[in-house]
Length: 399
Image 1 (cartoon, rainbow, N blue to C red):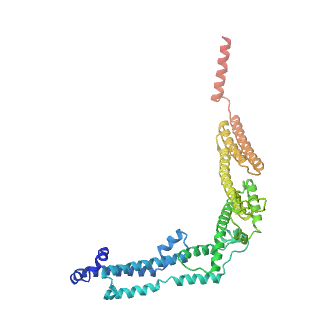
Image 2 (image 1 turned 180 degrees about the horizontal axis):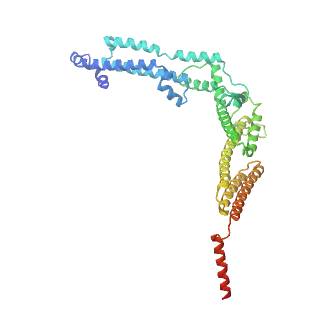
Image 3 (image 1 turned 135 degrees about the horizontal axis):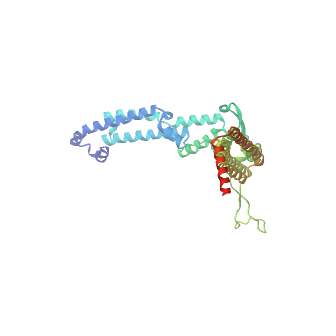
């Protein structure tokens, strides 16, 4: 219906047409009023309580930019509703009584949709905080969830990450960002990949360390991989974020020189990573290796412990016992192939355990055999059967 009114509204000046469409105009204007009222209620809920806020979080959209985009969406919807009023009442819709009322309400509502105060509030907050990228890479913090124990952490302000995301989105929204804040944002953008990688590595390291603490019996096998990670942490302690700001992931080396001392542009360039980027990659690789080795060790240790427990209760049979021992040997061979340290020491302790289990099983078997032997009585069916066999053999010999 709105489309029809929009197409033929030039004819509304004719008295007969104006009288014919009056009823439909009132109905459509009522629909527009209802839509504007719903838009008012949506705005009153505020951005933080809206579905748009949840969707913005899923899309990694920062809060200030998300709020400005949300306000602009409401403003565009308001403009579309006002355009519908024009379609229904014609180009002179502001001269109509209903049109004047709707225009007044729309103008008052549009004043509330000014996103400039949101931007200025954010700008004042950023200037007040004096956000900068400085300090050492690593820090020590207390983890309350595990009893206030000390844990390794990354000394990086999350507000820096939020800053560069806000500046990026606000620039797309055509806001003028001060030069000082823009520079900090550019530095944050350059450091951001390294910071995220280090945060993820430290988080994985903390989770893996807790798993290792829970498997104290075999944690000695991981000491070599743990030492590799600890050496890298010691290497990274003196590093600072200022070094990363001026480092690039790939750096161009100067090409070979010509006889006159100028660089040979025709020669291919070689690329090399800075030592800071190399450290981030090496640390991530070392933590990932420790994590994978820990997961593999947990699986192998479960198989070994399960086989050892079955040795205590399985049938006292050669093939059954051999099957359990072979599964243990297979797990040990796999650990040996994967280069676990202190494997000989751990295998020695496991051999002592298996030996004690087998001695216990033999002792129990001997005890059962002795009880059966001592409980044997003359005249029992077994003894009579033996005597009958002996007499039969004697008769056959005589024949």
